[in-house]
Image (cartoon, rainbow, N blue to C red):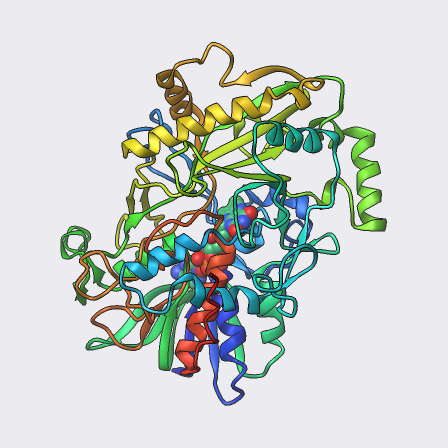
Length: 544
Ligand SMILES: Cc1cc2nc3c(=O)[nH]c(=O)nc-3n(C[C@H](O)[C@H](O)[C@H](O)COP(=O)(O)OP(=O)(O)OC[C@H]3O[C@@H](n4cnc5c(N)ncnc54)[C@H](O)[C@@H]3O)c2cc1C
């Protein structure tokens, strides 16, 4: 059996950073197992390719969630990257860290070293910020390039002026001192190309002789000797392929993402004994929190029809598209360099809220049924709005002992009353933004939810009918102290009760943060790499 020091399962956001940092020690050997193929496909790298990779099954797990009590009987689509870079290779490129309270809350839950002063140095170390930002908060020398959206559009400008007319300030850097305000989006885009975790971290690491990346390698089990993880079994070539085992001298690191990491633990006999028993899986280690606690952001997308100006809906057709393709080829700018959202707005749902609890995005485009993937034919603009820190929690459970069967994903969107109230407040704010005076020259009428929707109950019904994921699932292998029943890993990300095994990805978040999750997942992996290597953490940045 081949032996490495570390075996990392998953070459996604977290796995890519880990492979890079751990391989800095030349004497250490690292094997990375990735179920998907290499990230060669041009649509991965072309920013507007997002719309294609969204459904591309060769590089996307393309899961379906279970219908929830508040999704109107709908099963919501849940894309996940299945290629080098993982979800960072198919995501919407937005760079958003969250608020300092998010991480302070993690620390207050008993996780030492995870407060904002502790995690800020890692955010800084990872990034190469090009553009606005104070050096207290922003890094300039990292591998992850973060730029600001450079598309200028009268509709975006009018939207921001509209926000300011409602008292929402312009914020030059929502990843700086304060998140609240409105601004152009910050993105992981460089010279008109996507910066994924693979291009920033994994590909440079692959040039080192001690990094061995296996694609089309679907991990099916963690191998244990007693309570120690000693290796991984995988199928080369996917379902029906060849079984292979690799051994880890030091550690197995599970970075399969929020849906797959708990599923793989369960398939390996780590989880709730009731669940494992019902699936006929022998219990290796009882850990009831595995898969429990799933959180995500739930967003209704409000749509208005547009007059007097072209929107992206028309620009992507016929001759206009050819012009845009030429523009991208020659300047790396224009329509094909765009992300799915252009403007970000953070605001609070009520005066009693201490910090912003709503995130809203603006796009001068609209999608069929309000879901990203297919642009509409007539001109439109969209405001997606969501609650930043939902209370509702669901779960991920293996469907069967078959490692190729998709897991059961039940997010339980909106089951908590606070979530319903906040989502309704977000939709009302979206309406006020779309009907602001500066947007009036372009606003034809509200298409969704539509003027008939007036009461809170009607807004809630509309949210139930059309809300979707914003693709931010987390919290299924939560970090917490050993005496917390829900905790799966400790604050060093070691699985409670086992040795030689860590989980390092978005699943370890104990609570949802006020942000899209890529930036914080990269941070988690960078911090974990120091822990694994026994390196001291950088000095905390205390901000008064
Ligand atoms: C469509 C979409 C849009 C998004 N937009 C944004 C955005 O704009 N900004 C933002 O910050 N966040 C965004 N996100 C979320 C963000 O990209 C993810 O939260 C983040 O990438 C998660 O990182 P991860 O390491 O936890 O998992 P992933 O990056 O998903 O990595 C997991 C990896 O493990 C592999 N894997 C899983 N199971 C196995 C197995 N059994 N064997 C071998 N390999 C396995 C997977 O194929 C994958 O490569 C988006 C996500 C999606 C899907």
